[in-house]
Image (cartoon, rainbow, N blue to C red; front, side):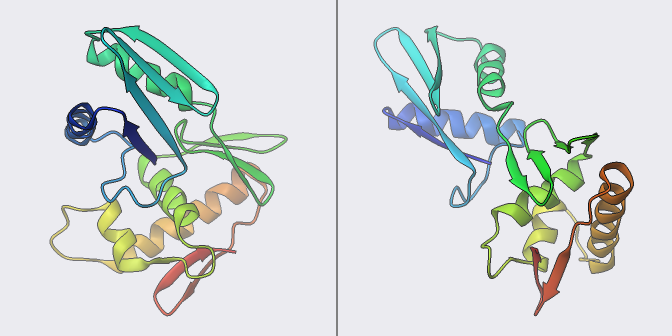
Amino acid sequence: MLKFESNNEYFEKQILSLIKQKNYFFYNADNTKFFSSINFNISQDNLKITYDNLHFIHKLPIRADLFFHSIYNLVNNFSIAFHEMEYFPFKQSIKTKVSELYLRDTHNLIICNLLLAEANKGINKQNLYKIIWPNDKVMQMNKLDTHLTNIKNLIWQECSVILNISSDKNFLKIN
């Protein structure tokens, strides 16, 4: 999840609209919880895409595939260390000293949202369910519970790390 900022409000709205249409993983609809931000600076005939201390400069106009490829190249190595693991949300993987685990989309969304959740409060189970399965007409919480169990088991089997996910008053968090 990335926050997108630009010196050009019109361009920012168009980019967010395109990202939303394409349903890219790094887009967060409420734009309030994010790992980092990307800045788009538009000059007369150039677009500068900046992330941390890295940047790409492209001539305008730019093809959409090149634009998104640049974003992926910038954020691809972003990671979060937790427990004895390193989580790469944009690569959808978890690395330890001895192994690397590639996550399914659903598992990646779960871990990503658990890590973005407020540390002491966590994320509401119903909200997490809606993020993962927005088109479900009927909420089946056992489906979420099954995926949580599967993630914990998978991480234990592949990485030999115990992932503790606690639930308190309908809020989930990683301990």
